[in-house]
Image 1 (cartoon, one colour):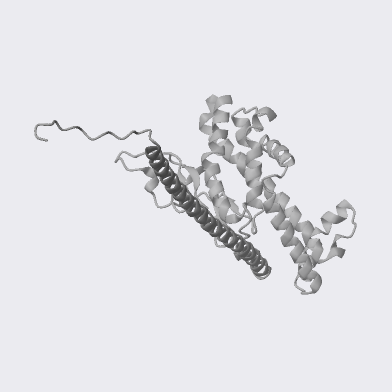
Image 2 (tube, rainbow, N blue to C red):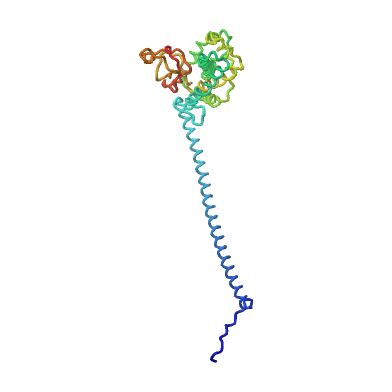
Length: 336
């Protein structure tokens, strides 16, 4: 009818049974979707973990295989080195030996700047008035240590030579042994020129002993050497002229490490040598410890054709096989 006011449509009840049912259906759909996504993610993660686990198992197996191959290679390499050492011992080093000759040059260099200077500082502390001679006395101490080590090594080699001819070690009185030492040595040389199974076995034993001495040179007890070095040092001219009173309390601060280094040089095959007797300066073998005096023209007086060495402050290290200077010696020139 005209003029009759319009009325708003009736509002639905949110709490009606139909509305609540729609909400439940929507919640169920969301829950189903979330469960589906979670299941998918879980499956993907499980697949990923399984895949990476398989890869890690494969890598672990490959690593184990490579480790076995490396171990086998090392053993075969060491075996080849041992065989080569039989025919040419001088040219083969055991790469497992931390005290091998090729390492000793670097050790000697570090020793020169380390233990040597520590020893000089020790003497400077106890004998401050003798600073100009303390470094020379330290060098002379090492020279003595090397001489003692060389004698000890020579004695070992002499006794091992008996393996080539056991009957040369027959019992003799001390005087007889001294008198026949030369003849016995000559006999051993004659026997050593003969080749036999026994000679081969004896040589292998000698090489094994040599390898053992090198490998244990860090742990050897040098007490007998230390006593000999101190006794000999106290006989030297420089010791008495400078009124040194070096007792065991002072000497034990540097003589043990000197003896250990000297022994490590002596047990190499062949023994490494130190040079401290050549008195003609050679720039290929020597470094000058301090600047030399200059003449009136301002030129260094050490520029002469053959400079003379006053004394050594540290010996040069020499490879006896070819005469190569492994480390230069430190010297003071006569005109410095």
